Amino acid sequence: MSKTIYILNGPNLNLLGKRQPDLYGHSTLADVEAACQSVGAEFGLNVKLIQSNHEGQLIDWIHEARNQAAGIVINPAAFTHTSVAILDALNAFDGPVIEVHISNIHKREAFRHHSYVSARADAVIVGCGVHGYSLAVRHLGGLLD
Image (tube, rainbow, N blue to C red):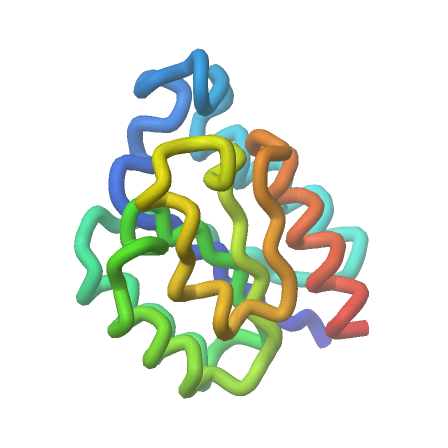
């Protein structure tokens, strides 16, 4: 029986590959999804990758994951540094949570150094580019095995 994992992406990640490619690279979210599907298949995981620019939508998907997903990979983007509401939603999720950031948030502006999500995350992957998503799915696969 395959397990579903959610890969949730926050604001502006729909522009991946077009927005600040010097910082985020040239890969698109579709490229990320293909890579994650491939890694997920190695572990028998059904990967659902979704993106929203709206905090409430991300929270609704986290709530949905409570009944639909075995684990969550989340790149909350700018909500990382501002959203107690996303943290609260993740705290209501029983499975493992992996936080991903394409850039190294600790080498950027000081306001990006704090993550509310890290307080709930079982692992945090930063600064590995879009490859961080594949690493997260691989780690999640191991945790769920």
